[in-house]
Structure formats: structure tokens, C-alpha cells
Amino acid sequence: MSDAAPPPADLDVARHRDLSGRNVEPWFRRAAMLGFAAIAIAALLGVFGQEATTSRASSPEATLEVRSPDTVRGGLIFQARFDIHAITKLDQPTLELERGWFDSMSVNSIEPNPSSESSVDDRVQLQFEPLDAGHTRSVWIYFQANPTNYGRQRQRTAVSDGNRELMRLDRSILIYP
Image (cartoon, rainbow, N blue to C red; front, side, top):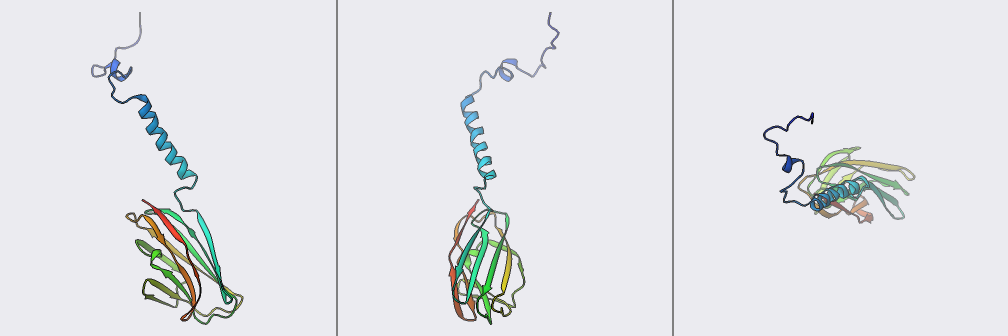
């Protein structure tokens, strides 16, 4: 004599418990779950971005260090830090950012604020107060990659003193959808 209650009327034991009549084989379900798990593990290992990398350039007058992620996911906010170290006095230190920094990107904040901003050709120029020899000016820019933005973008960065370019740094960013 069994004490188990009969299943509800709309439950078919053969189909729901024994999985008979299913069109999808168990190996397909397991492969799909393994694929989702692989994506999650890759994300945990930092494959899809936001780990900052550092790029450097120098000249006899100054050095530039850019610390920013080289891969991000669309829709996420990230920070870029630009350190300009003056070896000689810079009367009009200007940070020039190519269009790849701004194409389909939102700028949330720039700290400290530049004394003047302008756009020349495909570059944005941020001019700051004079920088004495031996001093460093750090500029933080907070970006957000627009969700519809994806692919690789070139992010050339230059430092000028007035109209005279001191150095140029080539880098790129990969944006995942």
C-alpha cells in the first residue's frame, strides 16, 4: 500500500517526471548551459573589460601617462586619468584628445576643469593653467560608453604647450556590445 498522493490532474507523470517526448536532447541543454557558464567565467576573469591599463609617452619637456581601460562594455561608466609631468615649465599645457575618446561616448565630468576648451579638426583641446617644472597635473575624465557603441576606436592623445605639440600617444579601446 502506497501513501503517496496521486499527481494533480493536469500533471502528466511520463512527460514531466520522466521527460518522455522532449524534442531537445540533454546534451544540447548541457552545451547551452556550459556556454553561458563560459561567458560568466570569462567576465569574472576580466576578459570583457574595465581593467585599467597604463600608457606612457615622453619628450624633453614633459611626460604623459594615461591610465584607462582598453576594453569596456557598452553602457558602463569608466574613468581615464591623464598625468602631465612638466620637465620644463609649460606656459599653456594643453591636453589634446582625438575623436575616439568622444565618439558615442558621454562625458560625465572633467576634473579639474580646463581654463579653456576648444575643438580643432577631429581633436578636443583642453588647456590648463601654467605648470612649473617638476610639477604634475592630473586630469580625470569620467566617460560612459553609449550602449549602441561597439567595436575598436583609436584614442590618440597629445600634450602641447600652446600650439607646439610636445608628444603623442597612440592607444585604442575595444567596446563590447
